[in-house]
Amino acid sequence: MSEYSSPPGRTAGASEQLSLDAIADAEPYPYWLESAEVPESNPTLVRDEHCDLCIVGGGYTGLWTAITAKERDPERDVVVIDKGEVGGAASGRNGGFMESSLTHGVGNGMDRHADEIDILEELGLRNLNEIEAAIERYGIDCDYERNGVIDVATTSHPPSYLDGLREEHDLLRSLDQKVEWLDCEQMRAEVDSPTYTGGLFRTSRAALVDPAKLAWELKRVAEELGVRIYEHTKATDIDKDGSGVAIRTPLGTVRCSKAVLGTNADKPLLKRIRQYMVPVYDYCMVTEPLSDEQLGRIGWARRQGLSDITNQFHYYRLTADNRILWGGYDAIYYWGSNVSIEQESRPETWATLSRHFFETFPQLDDITFTHAWGGAIDTSTRFSVFFGTAMSDRVAYAVGYTGLGVAATRFAATTMLDLLAGRKSIATKTDFVQSKPLPFPPEPFRFIGIQATRWSLDHEDKTGKRNTWLRTLDRLGLGFDS
Ligand SMILES: Cc1cc2nc3c(=O)[nH]c(=O)nc-3n(C[C@H](O)[C@H](O)[C@H](O)COP(=O)(O)OP(=O)(O)OC[C@H]3O[C@@H](n4cnc5c(N)ncnc54)[C@H](O)[C@@H]3O)c2cc1C
Image (cartoon, rainbow, N blue to C red; front, side, top):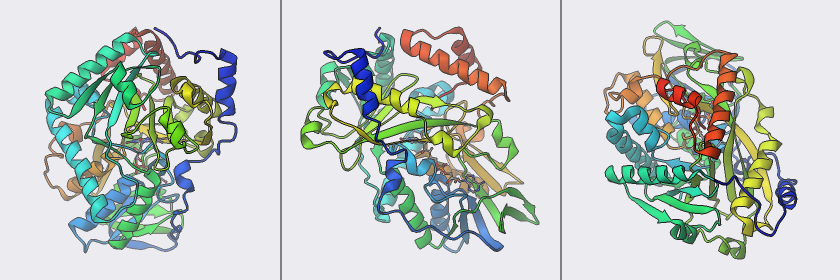
């Protein structure tokens, strides 16, 4: 099999320079967050607060929890606190792929939750449909497009990956899902890259959104429903307080009956969660807007989201103004589960991404990138969100989305509210909600293990061979993904 290669007619050195020149002027900042519609920031909490439900984290998890809590009981007094600004973390800077899968893809779902995959796929689809209904109901302006996604195989993949994609196609058909198999020619008729060898078009279970607009609009809806939101208010400690919970922040304490933690890749407030989640950095970039003529060179009339099928995969899509967002591939873990703003910038990853972009679309060699950024995702060893309660069911948490949380966060919100209310639902009865992933080992084994796994995944992407280390992890049910 071939590794990525230089486009015909250009030397490797010239290709390398072209891809570097293309990122030279890129703003190291999330494209989505630069919009003119950035909302005013909210006050910091500077006195003690009392409420029925306090939510820590103003990303999609926290905002959907706040909105759903108010929808279920408009009298419920709900407060959200965020250490930064709403949408400033993963929810405002992601790729905007809103997929129905709760299990990071049906293949991973089958591997880990085969007995209930039908139910999880059904709950996932229902969740996506309910998000779509909420977008309509509240007039949420987030450039929502339900165009489906294509998983694409390329000449840089081992041939066995194409066979694996066909198997996934058959599996999805057996689950009665709407999918189309695209051979090389049909794939290139959808989106034209000389590297494509085939694709699996999942037509109905995925949408695209502008992620930051979605976060900001959810903030608007939550406030219209009466939720109080404090920004630049970091929860530093959580503890039982009489029959409720006290959440301490630098300048005030929130006393509440129940609390929800939706803090994603940041250091969890509850120690018990720390072993199950590691923060991993994912990077992406957007091009300048393509002219009609430039877009015509690649087609893409149906505007699907695209993702290739290697362990280290790229995801890419069009924005509302016809830029290409191109991200993924590297998934970087920093020693000690470190999360910091410096790690949002990684020029060497942007250079790799740029090279891969021009290898995929050599006909777009007159395009440059305007923005490049990164963000932390909360990886779990099962690649999907896990749940729990603490402090005698007064606190619920959901983390571990592993890079597929744009839709799953709403499912997590409704599930956490069910858990806090002691309400038995189809979701809370599943093993998926009741079980935990296997823990990550402590440092230094954590760092060494993740590096060994990344090396092995890269090796498999190049050779098609799964080595002993990966097979051992498979047997243990451990994994690493983004
Ligand atoms: C580059 C990138 C691309 C991605 N692409 C996709 C994609 O295309 N599709 C997809 O499904 N998923 C994608 N994801 C993942 C997706 O963005 C997340 O799963 C989702 O946004 C998680 O939402 P959240 O609310 O749980 O977390 P976040 O949006 O991270 O929100 C958590 C909030 O908690 C706050 N917080 C943390 N600790 C505290 C504290 N102690 N006190 C107060 N506040 C605190 C943070 O400030 C933050 O605002 C991507 C992620 C990244 C980084």
